[in-house]
Image 1 (tube, helix red, strand yellow):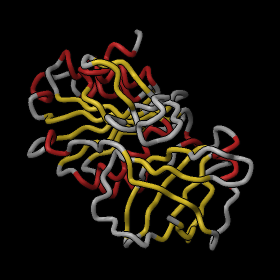
Image 2 (spheres, one colour):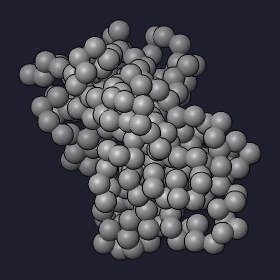
Image 3 (cartoon, one colour):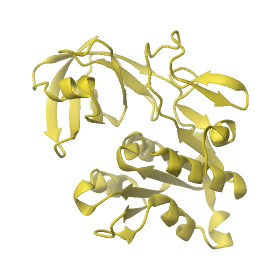
Length: 254
């Protein structure tokens, strides 16, 4: 399907914020799913891009330039048509955090799929980790949808000095806090995902993680994005990208 790029913003020299006009219903688009986008130009393969938000019939996605495909996509101009397929993939399960506090833990561009999730949950604390003050984005948006937002920076230039996982440990260091938590949801660097997954298992808190793997077809046919789980090999594009933490913990190393 062709979608018209209606709004474009450069967050910095590598991260871009796009809104496209959708001619299909967006009611069934869920947090954690992704689009499969034809970037055009010299890029021959589509790229999986996480859903950031859905608003007034428009689809919003934020992406970072990581190669030729996302570079070509970043050059699109408002008014141009973009070939987009989706949504694909398994979304986050919002029932886990029902009637309790849900904690979202994201690192860098891993915060992107967590924003729409913050709008689908009831009581939300977001812990967002960045390298520096200058690299922070979506802060105000999360503040508008969450009960509390904690920002961390690796260099201490803004918010808490350290990373998002350390802030999670600090937030839940008291036993009484843990009893109020319904679920943990995380996306970001593998080290962060591993820490949150293990923390959730240790403290008996339901935890879902959004995995990222290189994809070929995006529909489960090529098997390029397979990861190991406790139930055998699963495709991130089909059975994921969202998994229960207990299924995929063996994918990571301390």
